[in-house]
Image (cartoon, rainbow, N blue to C red; front, side, top):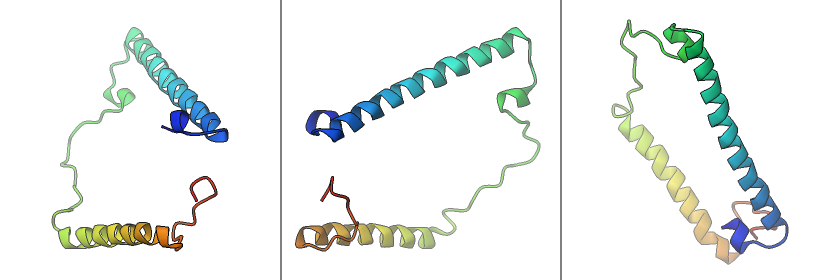
Length: 103
């Protein structure tokens, strides 16, 4: 969207961002594939080398549903704060401190 709808420096930023994402994805996939193939070629069979671990004890989970009221309250406060800030934006109240690109 930035590339097609932007102008000037925004298009340059979009181009740089796109190239960075593509190069990063390509290198992550190729380097990971290369390293895993070398590990298999050298007969490395230790599960810890592949980021795995044995399940000896049960993993403790964070009780989100137990604390449902607290987490839902925090979510509601954040959502309401964002909506109020967005509603006040057209009336000259800039609660987000937007830069010149978005003002």
